[in-house]
Length: 375
Image 1 (tube, rainbow, N blue to C red):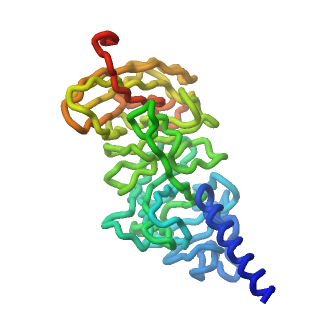
Image 2: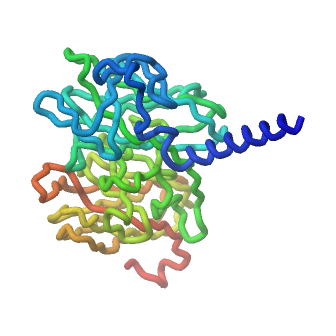
Image 3: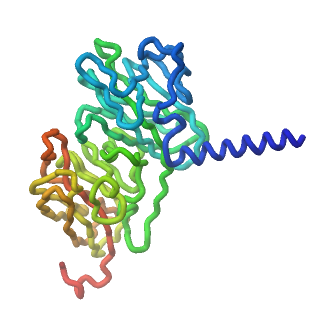
């Protein structure tokens, strides 16, 4: 009986440890450093569905070592020594235990290889949602090393579910397909504060960021993701926005900010409850990320039909200015929206898109607008 009790305690502690480990960080073997046995590989092709510890594979999946060559191309892995490549209709999945009803984000690193039109489909199953999945085109590069960190959000409708990353492409060369590395989860919780009508206006709550990769995390458009991995905000555009941190970039306030990396195709929005006839101030910071993004920039801020343009002349070395938009609410719900007027590229000859940074966004009700004035 004592042995049975001890075994029960050990199992409980193991479950708790696993749950804690995957709510804010890599999934078990999320970096694929634990690989198949030599007998489970044919060259680089994985021959058994459970060969990669903690993962189940389907279709043509390759286990790639950093520096491995494919023709004249050298395959580089951003973290560690190994990654996986998904061929035609191939997928990887891992079963996780989560808190039912809570919201989570998935962050993973991906890079294109030899296919022209590479996409990834990320989903969770089972789910009560009609569409709880995201499709990520990975042709547009916002980083200079070929890899991007991508994120998507979901609600855990069940305590146990599968996270699936699938390559829906069909290429002439069945081995062509994207590389996947470093898959992580993060529990998302955020509330409004008394001094800000916006939720998560400082962007401090968002997807998991890998500590040793300096290329930020892309947050996809709402059309590609049913739940935003940035609580309170949605990407109302065709292109992604980039979530950046103070460890690798310059941010105006705190530890996190948003870089608008795709001009007017990269818009960030939040809808809030307002009182008709009441006056509000929208206050925010505009700057650059200290990432060689130079030139004349312009952030357009909208509050319903009211708008303001905030210019910023970037030297690519950090810094910011403050913007402000005073408006009178004409509806009970007002959408706050930000976009970049221009397209900008880094001056490092990489051809990588970049743009202005926004941060510290606050929406305040103005109690005595006549006494305060319009500025």
